[in-house]
Length: 525
Image (tube, rainbow, N blue to C red; front, side, top):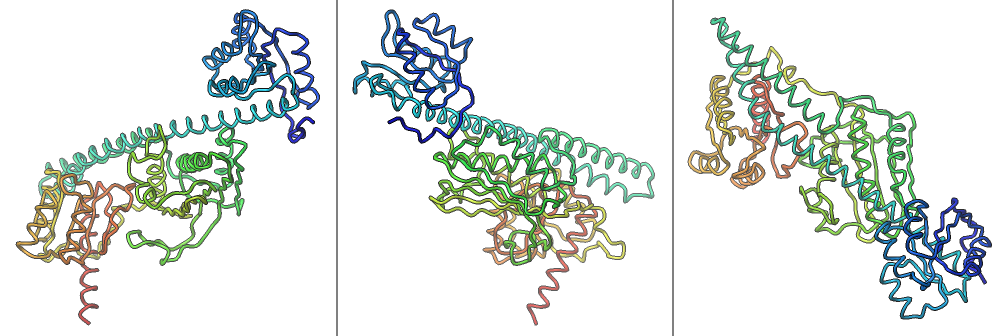
């Protein structure tokens, strides 16, 4: 009896290209499809020229072909189809197809084969072939979309690197301008200081505009959770195969928060496409948005604990999961487990989350699936560095020993001169190894100020070595606002966003020294 298991699942009207030299056999084959309720348009050909023309003009959804005909063959039809449209299903319908020939046909790229003497399986074979072709196209589309997103992220990373270099060039201008403004008794120097500072700020704004353009980013805006999820569902249309069930849930339809709609949309799309690829045999992709309150114990040691209300964006799948080795390397640049991947997708997601002042969590079990939770603060106002200063608090030092570690010579000189002018004993080191040698000779400093971007002896290695030397006081790390918190060591690492103004630097130094003083008093008690 014919297989009617798929009879209830309706198909859109399909185009069938039939390669057959017997009109009677062609009609019998189509009768099987009619009996199963398949709606179709058909074009019958029996030579190579007509077949090639039909591939171009008719654009079939599926090809049903006899094995041999006078002057033409099924093998030749299959070869031409695969060269023209590799994803289009091809089913042999023949009376002369033996077992060995059938196996060879499948190896050559045929989707299935049906014997004319027993056509009962034809309709179900056609349905299955069309369904598999649709899933294959969806997977290919998802992979292409992921590569496209990651290429744009590569551009963003390139722009970010250029932005970093330009910021390092602008940093001396800002510091020098602030220093020159201190010479108010000389109007010419004061005007020069104002000019240098303003040029530095304008340059910084141009760098930020370039970076935002490369990322396709916009300013912080009012993001509605429902609108974000609706946009995500629209982007995923055509990318989710039928074997994957997509569930999108917004617990509170009125939920809104401050953020960048475009970047968050890119982040969620990237995670969803990764989840689809992790479920080659199907599964459930679930995206849930809700509001949670995070307490201080939720945050890891190296994260800044910002207690308050957060939007949780969860992307989970029932796919392959990740091994511990993969999880450890997940956020390494250019590390990927997918052929053709760039290894930048998850790094991009983490950058977006951190730039929103949020945190990211991953839970993955091999063989069961993975879940990414993104926590975005409901309110994340940007801090103005100049507003950090309270006029009633003295910014002058008391000859405290400050170890300054910066590779770039111009920036190191200006930072040293600034701290020295304001009453600090500064030792300037251009590398982590030089700083450690100074500690061996002179002992531990009262404070360490360090640039995050060091190549000769990385900042993280330097911090680890400082901890091993017994340094337990604050470390001020000069870094970009969107740099992830990579300093996962015991101690008190404080971020100071670049480019840093003189006032912001001095205030951060005073605050760090006061914290260490209070900490020392408690320890002595």
